[in-house]
Image 1: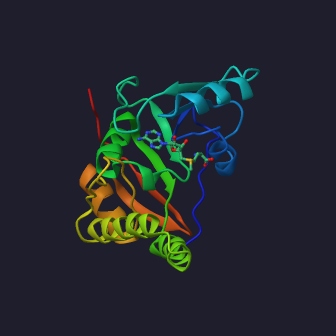
Image 2: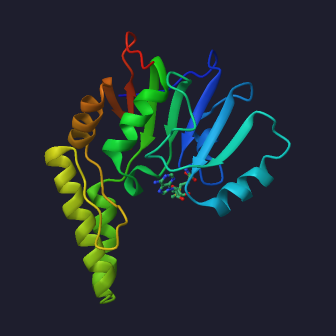
Length: 199
Ligand SMILES: C[S@@+](CC[C@H](N)C(=O)[O-])C[C@H]1O[C@@H](n2cnc3c(N)ncnc32)[C@H](O)[C@@H]1O
């Protein structure tokens, strides 16, 4: 399926796990849209602020994806996220994303498959990097759990990592209230119900 997003009539877009802000270009968000980038890493947020200091419609904030309390409900026309789903508590994040989207708004994110994880694990195995292999095994198990239940669990040190399957994404996004869940390559797209209201 070929899915693309049109941002022409949008007022504001949220970029979750924005890093240095390049996901906005990957999605082709035009200049007139107010773009809010959030990330847990204060250093990258400072760098992004510097990088875009001449762009008055780009806003950057240190904020965990799991807690978007800085933003009111029904605010963003779209929420996008690049190469970040694997590091976050997906069920919690998609509930927050659903809340901050306008009714009918769209969430889109890229995701990591079991193939990506296995490739890294095999590489670590050939180099006998046992700790890396164990961590990759955790990611694989977490991805399988996500496939079966739409839930994930943290690693021993409290960090999160998983791979995502279409089935798992359908379960967790559907549970949060999203509809019209669709896929294009390694990207997922899902819409907030038009009748949804969070007051
Ligand atoms: C691989 S980078 C991707 C950055 C950017 N989206 C891109 O495509 O270039 C993942 C980003 O997610 C951020 N991140 C990880 N966990 C997060 C969380 N719980 N909340 C917000 N950001 C998070 C990291 O700090 C990092 O900047």
